[in-house]
Each structure stands twice: as structure tokens, then as C-alpha cells.
Amino acid sequence: MANSIQRLKEGAETRSVLIIDDDPEIAESLSRILRVFFREYVIASDGEEALALFYERFKASNPFTLVVTDLELPKLGGSDSSAKSAPSPLPSLSSSSRHTMKRLS
Image 1: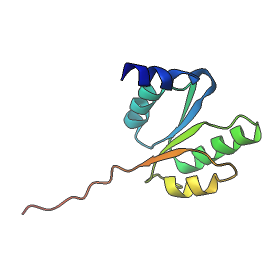
Image 2: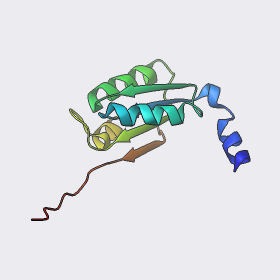
Image 3: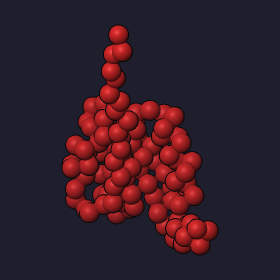
Image 4: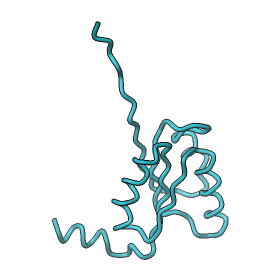
């Protein structure tokens, strides 16, 4: 397993990740994990901010290597912002922490 992790670290100096999550604790936790594998990480707290950052980097010919997004975001959801960021094929990872609550009484 150590060899696999080492191989993932190779090339980290050229990679960047856009983390999109409205929960600051989750975004910070993700950044602590991903900073091992990416030269740069940028955090956006909603879909509109993320889309603006994505296009800014794309137009500057310095696109993100990966986008990690929560599916349920204020202003523009993760799936909507992913669809609108389509000018280049970009690996993305989507997640949701939606919980179904059941009343016990």
C-alpha cells in the first residue's frame, strides 16, 4: 500500500483541486487529505463561487486537475455547477451528506 500512495504523490507539484462544500469543517477536512496529492487546493462555499473560480482558471489556461463537490449547495447545486463547467473534460467527485430522518414517536 505504501507504494500505491507514493505513486499517487508523484506529480503532485503540477496538480490542483477545487473543493466545493458549504460546510467549512468538511471542506477543511478534505483539503487536509488532498493537499498530500495536489500542489494547490481552492475551497468554494457555493456553486456560483465555484463556477466563477473554475472559469477564471480555465480562461487562464490553468484549469483544475480535479473538482470535488457536494451535490447539495446554496445558490447552485454541485450537479448543476458540474454541468455548467463542461468546456473541458474534468475528473470530478461528487458527494452528498443528506440524511433521511425518521420520527420515532
